[in-house]
Amino acid sequence: MGRGADTTETDRPPVSAEGARGRIPHPFALTWRDGCFLHWPVDPDELRPRIPDPLEPDTRDGRAWIGVLPFVAAKAGLRGTPRLLRWSVPEINVRTYVTYRGDPGLFFVSIDIDSAALANGIGRFSRLPVRRARMHVSRTDDRVSFASARESADEPPARFAASYSPAGEATFPEPGTLAAWLTERRRFYAPANGDVLAAEVAHAPWPLRPANVTLHENTMVAANRLPPPTDGPIAHFCDELPMTASVPRRLRHR
Image (cartoon, rainbow, N blue to C red; front, side, top):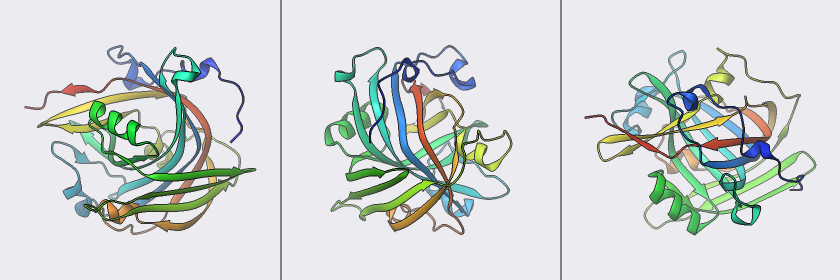
């Protein structure tokens, strides 16, 4: 997918407001590449059973939202380590938007990556629902083709196949807009034996472009037992964005 040499931007993006609070260290880094945001509105009452307590679905204008995000996690690993110790792997995550004690964040319903070893290691370390899926990503000029298939005897098959490309100039989402509400979140939550784990990410504002998307197959929503979308999708393309992440920490709930 032809990119230039590594830059220090991957290890030193701007710090987000959440990440700055309490000076939380960010030992991990990666670069988002060739990615697409696909978002569908859903009924929050139908979504609620899939959100673990004590998290609450976050809504905008009375609607909850589900996101399916295919991209390549490039140059991922510990900050400051040489390129030989980093990895690049396709990923697709299914997420929704939640609050914890009034603080907004992300809740990952599923994260699929094309590496069994990484899926096992990241899942054990972060408590996130990470699974292995077979993926293929290619890019011709500005058009990206992304395919993912997770087969399991215990779960419905989770498949995704799409091609997408930018359809306009990049802009930064304005505060208060739906695009900002869907993309500019710098914290995610995960359940942990009655408590909650939280981690922060830091990066510059998303340079979003409208996207032309052809969906060939998408069972990611149904496979995760999420409510069927009522409209959409809203699609945004992002070519590249470096970011860092903190270690998940436990927030005492009880």
